[in-house]
Image (tube, rainbow, N blue to C red; front, side):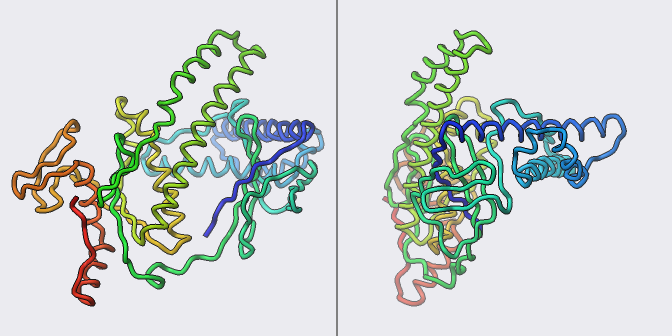
Length: 386
């Protein structure tokens, strides 16, 4: 399995200048190569391949000193990135999806470059890069000794720099060969509470973006008053970007800690299978759904569970809030109805709590664990209705 380890870099001013110049060179190479492919098709109906463009690099470096200053494999990776973009474009065309033709990259739309094989070395608290030098790096956690570093990416986030190591690790032992399911939890994601568990526990929604909206609006108004293209507007742009980065990091940190808690407390975590991309098309809820970051939380839980030897399962979200978790009868509700009251069996509990129990009951792994527990000990795994 592959994992990415990200560490903060602290380049000196001259090193930061070189890194920025490399990003500019890579961006121009990407745009020129995209223009070459586009013009070849529009004028001659011919496709330009990666191999053809890579073969032209050697000659281009003789006439362009900026290309010569960048590591050769970094430049080759730029062409691979463009080639992958076109392959994804044609894949979407063949599937009848919204194609999205590859776009030219603006000044602040190209923020990373990659060493695919060599050109870097980790030396204690320094990261040595070919043609750049040794940059201070903060290794806040070790890379597993059994892991093999495959690629290395330098990433710019406003005025911060990061090193991202793509590491190949041994595949974990399949879940069924490790431990039996003793503790399982059904999870209902929402906006009032970020999570509601089938045992009745709720996790509040921090709403990081909502809490920073006033400050964001203030900084955005300041930016709009600056002259376009001026140095002051550029400075204000960075202030707005830093604030967005702070919100993004707050959400990411919260999701990391919450997903670690779920994986550490339960053998099985069951989520609803949600089509979030369709849900954010609702303009009334789009900002709140994006602020909650359900997809990110699920991804974090999934990869942490894989490493820990536990299991994450996704079940159908159809009618989880409308069905009674005790008798299974349909009890229609509007979004404004927050309490589930079943007229058939008399069950009364919070709407999201009822949904979380239904989510757990739909889990095939949980059903098998209950049957196994009942046959071996005469007691089945409990589902708490409240």
